[in-house]
Picture 1 (tube, rainbow, N blue to C red):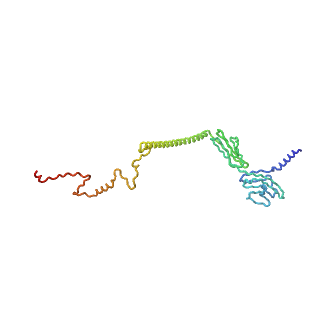
Picture 2 (picture 1 turned 135 degrees about the vertical axis):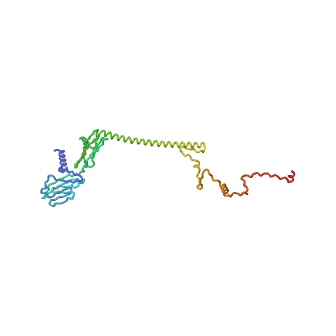
Picture 3 (picture 1 turned 90 degrees about the horizontal axis):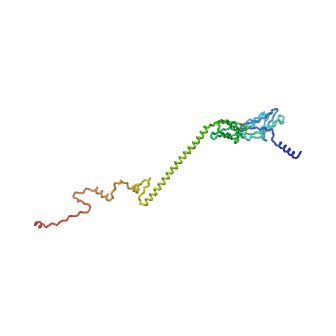
Length: 336
């Protein structure tokens, strides 16, 4: 035998010895539930001692002669050697080994179990949209799920392990079957999808009309706002031009006040300064006399009427006096 053949045989022998034992049973458990590790095909005859190990650690021991009672513990062994694990958790995934001894102390059985824990899958949810002509199947929970989608009996390749989608053509009725499963559970859902052409047109028309109506309303409001701003700006510019022209005219012609259209003219009375607080406003047709005339007027009203002998006092400048002719002598008058 050549050297190469010998090396090949040695590698083959070592690979067989290093491989995991083929008699390990893989057991799948559901997260949050209980599980029983049974010993199939074994008869409990002349058996006295049962050992269960997790990895390299002994978790529970059962002796028929002692009859132990441990119903409230995590692990429980029955008379037939079955190991019950309560409320499975992810850390319970491990290798479990059972060793059974008879009453003579001899090894009657050794068996290994590989326990794996998975979360149960949820019920698939099928949803569709007649406008976009798409349907979707998805699940929310589950460890290592396998999602299968069938449309009218045809298998559709899933996008991921928890999501699958399909775009259908103009078909009125579509039978959809969606199934999700893993090693510990299986759930499915079936839907009959009906999308009529009228329904599609109606949805499309409603969507288009609704969008166009909103656009028209927006444009009308925008145009109204722009026109209003233009009118305000134009009116403001006209007033500024009229004020400038009025100022130029006032400079050329004189201090005559200039009235701008749209402004309220001021009356002369409004332009006068307000009177002092001590004086009261009086009627425009009656003016009070000056202080001197007022005193004289009061004296005339209070003085008693003059007597008859009183000489009339003439007002104004004195009248001229008549000339007095000289009297002739008495003798001369008689002679004449």
